[in-house]
Image (cartoon, rainbow, N blue to C red; front, side):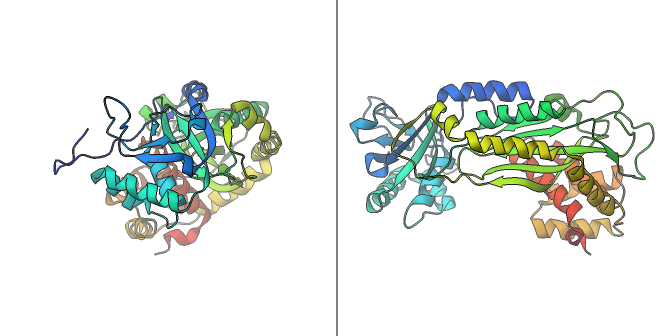
Length: 404
């Protein structure tokens, strides 16, 4: 068991055994195929479950926090020794109890005293029994959710989206996966326009020329050959995201890709669907059952993704970007300091944005958005990178964010 600085034992968490991070389509699809075989989803009464601070039923107790079945009827769904919680799942359970147990408190308590943590959770589970959806992966409990949670799996979403995007002449530029989210980002090189920028020179014509080359080598973006339209070229960006663990819904977002540096900025939602459905019956759920239940939803998803590549949507976003390019920032340092305070940027994040802004981009709201999007390429963690791309999009859309 690892120890903290005071020599106290801290909790170990169940983790995904496969790939995660920012990469290409091939890597993502291979991982989704692997996860499909490792998933277990079932609905159970919490009175048939117990939280233990270790597996006291084995000869060599495992020093972790785990969910253990206390009913023989659950033997086919999870092993007798139970499964370790992921950090996310422990937070899920605390949020579902009455009274709720704040996740920050629960994580800290689990790090320092697993026995008290297990006792607290068990007492509350007995006091307010509920029926819950338990989602497991790689032998770990990864989420504990409402029995009205609609399962929209990454595997089904990915293949549905790929079929539509290919029909529309699009291509994947990035795929990412974390313990809580999957994201796929698409563009179309046949749809483009140009935003004039005084910092761009005519010889900067190749895709990704100003981007992070290490990042571009990991994703499937094109980095060679001239892009249609020359300097200032922008293409539509369609971002599809989903959470299987209750950390958000299923979303299709529109944005812009700037070809010269492959900066991505997400600007507005086309689909924002929560995972809410009818009450689930107790029992084990197969992938076939989940796919059949969601057939009608995915037909609607296909229609909305097709709409994302329509020129009218793209033209509206280009107009926003041109307005941002016409909005000169007279005092970049002050504007960025104000923005950093408003959105909670770290000092390091602010300084990196300012460096790119002053060196590579026009001193406009569009240029600042591009600097923010460029910093996102330097970030390995998908969730943090997405926050920066979303911030870039907000800046394109809302001039008040940089008012001095």
